[in-house]
Image 1 (cartoon, rainbow, N blue to C red):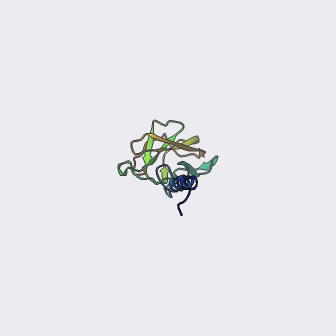
Image 2: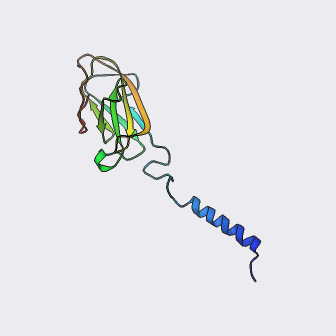
Image 3: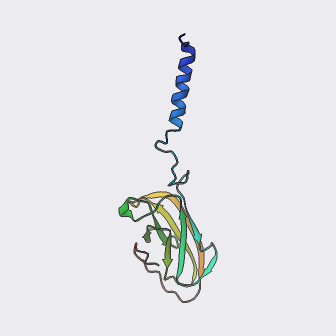
Length: 145
């Protein structure tokens, strides 16, 4: 017995639609980005924290990070809104070594290997206790401000 064309066509369309939904193709969430848009979030120090020099800035990322020459995304670390004066970091922490005493906003932004912005940013405000001096840039090896 031949199946009716009224039955075969809708079943074929449904099968193609379902297989496309589960294909894992471009744009599908991967374990690398934990199923959503890329994000970076500063985890330490807490916003409003009092710190002494040096201190360790830490963050989480939903995408793998690495040095730009690996093709992976990385983070730009900058101070007091000076996003054009940054240090490249391919990991999830960076030692801040040299800031003047007082209130500072530490920012990070997620960047592609070519240094174009991915979009996500995070910031924390800290108050540095006495003993620092003017900011100095570090290097991608984790130097420090």
